[in-house]
Image 1 (tube, rainbow, N blue to C red):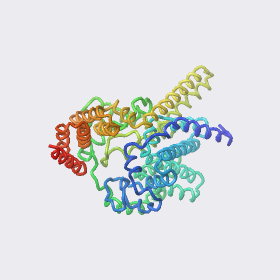
Image 2 (tube, rainbow, N blue to C red):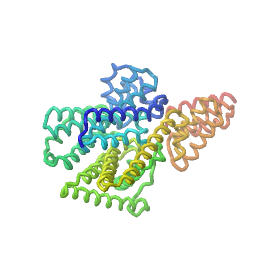
Image 3 (tube, rainbow, N blue to C red):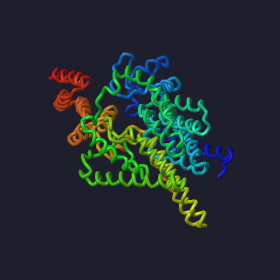
Image 4 (cartoon, helix red, strand yellow):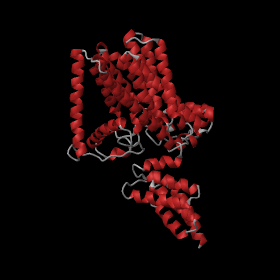
Length: 515
């Protein structure tokens, strides 16, 4: 199918407008969660003159002399916050606008990649539209601190486009631009280190077999680590100096549990009805530890067999549809590979991890739909074709509406936490709510959510409970219930949060002086 330049321009224009419309209501959202630490209370982003310092700090550093407190080295993300601060000051509207603009850019980049693969604008448009309006992306686009995934995806997609151009035309300049984009991607999020080379390898394996064994292509990308790794070592005082939350779990249970979550993630992409932060899952110690573990093992075998069938059919029969489905599904699994907890991470799965990987599922889905429509046309079955188009339209409307509604959760602090707690209790979220209500002098709700945090801590222990006890103590002080306040502050003294303990001790001394 031949596409005119006017046709492509029209599709891109529609993608920009539709994506902006579903995210427009996210622009007035407040700072949430990590936004407070990364932006609102971060003096390093208050001046663009601090940009060189950002290459020497982990992402959570808030002063030039601060020691690293995480394994996250993402200076490019913090630089974009400094630029936002230069343009918008402390107004979250501008930061949200940057996220939306970056997401729209990525939608256009997905369209460009799909155009190179599908060779027609119609299929490319629907793949990009799925990516643009899918509600799972709200965890990155509507949440300012989710920018790392959006920014990294921008450079990975750009690098992949220029690599495709290099593989087609052999221009070294295209390969150099691709490598440059890769450098930017890894400075935005370390996840990109493996993902782009894996996607390049996949593209070669499916579409450019003559390039698959050209080692210099892969070395061109990995060579830039000679620049990145020394800077990371210096900034963090080590490659990964901190043991993250899942470190205490053995590698095999970690990886197998992470593999289980891949199938949960696919369900989320298909039916995104329960989007929320702080997802958790049961640790699986063997394939027989639960029905979910057994189904995971069977699912992995079935997926492997299916991918083998697709690749064989593509290779021997030149079935382009099978090749595209293979490419899309493999894109998903390969881009999730660095997140399988081979090296222990903070959590088993998170919705923001799906931002880049989901593109593969959209490409595969559109390949299946396009094949179905072609069959309908070839067999002169307009009724079935119209049914397929009606179902697609309905699904797109549902996704767009769900995104719009999910943005409303991000638009109000209390609503955000309550919407997430609807799906799973969380000590931190209850603790934050108790503080919010306390600051509003709604003391009954402040006590209510402090107690909920303490109750949930019995089931899901968390150090955040120290803050819940502290908030409870403050609330009882305001109610002049000094005995209850004393009990709460004494609980705070059990924990290792030195800042809270110091404040709690001051209140305890104040209570003693009132006697």
